[in-house]
Image 1: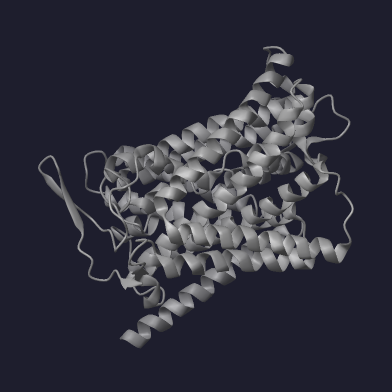
Image 2: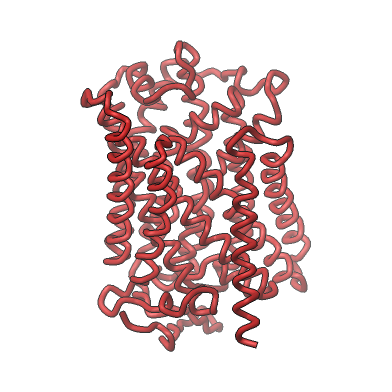
Length: 473
């Protein structure tokens, strides 16, 4: 390892303005716009949501699943519009943490860093759970359906270890190889899913399924719960901002990647949730109780072999999402260490790989621990995915809210402030509403405990920060 402390900032001209890009010892200017977009897309892992998240949202929102995804899409686009202005002015691996430091007090920007790091780690644990779930689905395809309880738990633990160690190793080695790998995996998986959904829609004819949009037959409470989980399908769309040192022309490619990933993924999720709900109308097994929904949908569409191919693609996509989260978390941790929010050993980069090696290993380890503990306890891969994913949303919404507030103050004295005020107010209120819908009325167990777990984490982080500041005084 070599310390990145003291690494010179890389500067370039943008018209009459000289802009400094902090690289902190990371490899500079190597990722193309498509590879930069791949980081956000892979963290979102759009191919995983139709196969696993949409059924979970359906369990909460029922026929209102497409509406839940439409609301979540609008919210994510609003948030992308609050992040993009910062991404056009500042380039750093610290992502949203760097943006909030521009206009918020140190305590609030530090809170953003801790919330974002928590979000990336819990998302990594969630998709590791998804990796376990789809591994079990593929074993079922091979006829291995009955495994002793102890053996099943050990197998799940081994699968968690494979995903964690594999993601940590690739993140440690080479960011460019990682980006290309994630891009190819997601592209293939999304295309297969899109083919099945398109065939389902054609099979049912080009007409509107009014049952999915008749609000008087739906529970707004359940749709609100569904929106919170639907948001998990998007979280990490901003992770391209962690590549500020490594992306080519970052002040243009990163904001574009953030907005494009929110819009493209949102459109994909709305269409998929609508198509899946429509496709299961004639099924005796509800969407949320189907062990392999795309097996049924592919058979209904007349392309049964694609069901297994989609499961394979989603399994590999779960690994790619784990990798993307480890990459993002390690870069946030790198900058946190530079600003005294984490141990100084985490502020180093590898001399040859030019990656935050120590931070990558730690991020992969922290993602491994909760998933491994739950797997050994006998928790299913689907439950690990759903539980850890819901926890992650609290962290992301905190960070997104802080960025919206930071943008409000950052643009306070500019001519365009009125438009900024409207945008940030709408984004902040929408995020507060999403959180509130999962606190009151009190949701069922174990979701009712998640806000307290997250609050305890923030309390510990802020206490550590206060003690650290006092020791420096």
